[in-house]
Image (cartoon, rainbow, N blue to C red; front, side, top):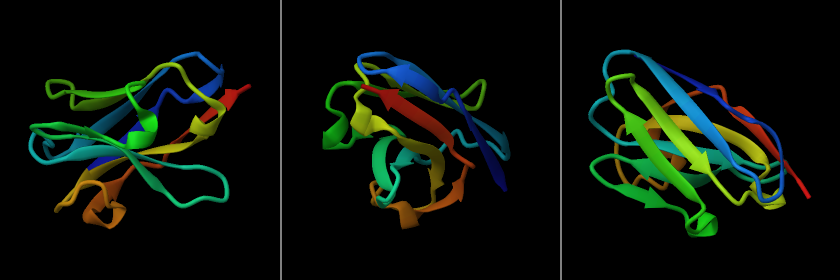
Length: 120
């Protein structure tokens, strides 16, 4: 089993930046796809970014978000810049067990989420 714990969320003004972290414990996750999803109030959970031997991003985040990971520290990061009020959501880290990586039911391990609020 893999346990995922997110951190780094908070309140930020529009145009600001945040860096989210996802710390993994349990068996190694140095292989496979890790991703960030988000769920805004009243909306369905949506894909944000994924990392494996590649990186992939949702069109909605443009060039404002970067996913990275440090295998030595078993941590996945999400650097978010030029934040907009529409980025307000709970952000979840997840580990995939199959593709395609943009679909949440292809992920079998999830963190508890970290809340990001962007004020206008």
